[in-house]
Length: 183
Image (cartoon, rainbow, N blue to C red; front, side):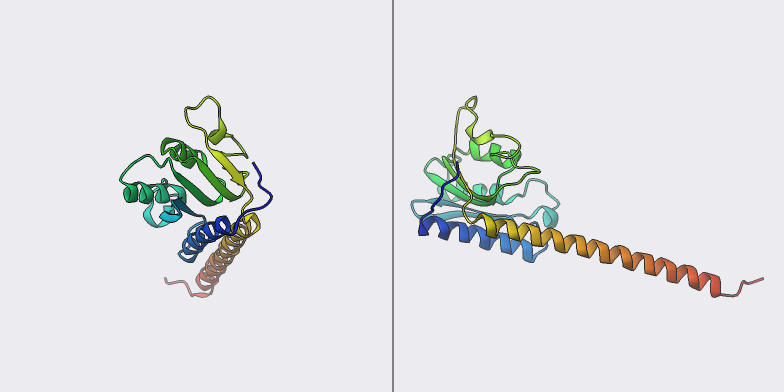
């Protein structure tokens, strides 16, 4: 559900999720961040660490859920809200359902992996025993811009690396051709 206006408090929590996304971006991870709020306090934070830990499960939402569960000493996060910069994937949506988070706010949609609105509607599926109230679009522009910038820079780095490899191969070939043969 798209909410047209958000409170200053909701914007503040999404800004905290954006801070987490920035932390991921600083270390070369995909810039996605999440926070979990309980009784007006952030009790869980997370940003992507998949590349650094070589662990496919270390998404921002999973890390925030783990920290929130540890803080509350319970796997049930029934009185909590999650703020996440990008629409959760299928794995993270499953974790949100299993941890019983009742409300999720997310920034931008993820047309390639989003499992809340884009590809699936996991969090609001009537067949599941737990449904989540979902609000999309909170600071969507800021959230989406971080991803666009990250992947643009990644493509530029890949292009520069490819160009450098070609130049090195050409230099090695030229050197081989220029050197006198030994008899």
